[in-house]
Length: 374
Ligand code: GLA
Image (cartoon, rainbow, N blue to C red; front, side, top):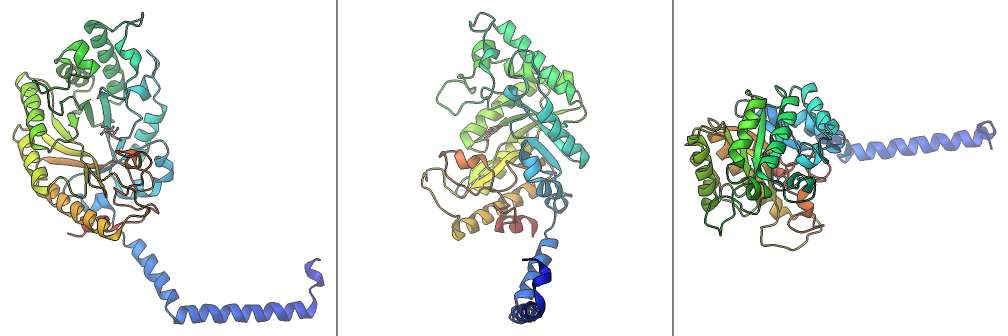
């Protein structure tokens, strides 16, 4: 049946339907619906940009990946002025097999940053994890010699750092080289870099990176870096490096924290301790889990009280960062919004977590408002 066959009856019915709909809309407006809509859209317009709020303090960054630079583009472009590649600059992403460098994914992140006038932190050059097994073996599959591994390290660092010279302003040169305790020394001995090259692999990595881009800021980056015992060990490492004249400029405190750990005082004490060596300090991988470390339970939705506590934790930590802006030269979140976070699989695989300041719908959470209203 075509429109033409509607006839007069059809027209009258359509008119009635129109008036009915109009009446419904008017009732909805009178009862506050319109106003609510207006309030919601006004709220959206008033969401301040994080990086702008912090422009007198430090750059605010996010770790992004090949998916989120599309799916979270609006948030990234609005709120952040520094980007870190979540995985795309790691050894296994850039040189999966010997001599075959693949830069496309890393390039896309750097290009997005440049298009928006953002900084880029390079992450990471030398790490015991996410490095292919071939790196530590010779052509016959036997453990690589110190000379071979040093040569590979130099080649990799030189190729990657030179490619981004003047575009990546800071590098996490060595990641997680300090032990969690137990052994006699302060270095992690289960790293193949350590086992094959020896303790000077760290100094060598910084020297190669500095040669490739003398203008880049070079960081040592680690987790549990505000834990008093581990921060003593990190401090010793950094002091040794500085005394040897190694070009290290800063320390990255990863900041994978939760609603009950660590205290703001502990964070501040660690910042001041590292700063006493004359180093810059950056928070490089910030997220605050709604689960205390020992809690291995699951939750279907984020409970209001935990989100409240999380917001307070974010507030007190950002108070510390702001107070120490003389040495804190960057704060980077490890992710953009709660719909995509590594915490969904760590420390419990497949457990939903909500550790960031934007929710799963990309809306600002209580934590966001706590760090922008001060
Ligand atoms: C460490 C690394 C990061 C990342 C996180 C987990 O902190 O430094 O590159 O792998 O773990 O996502």
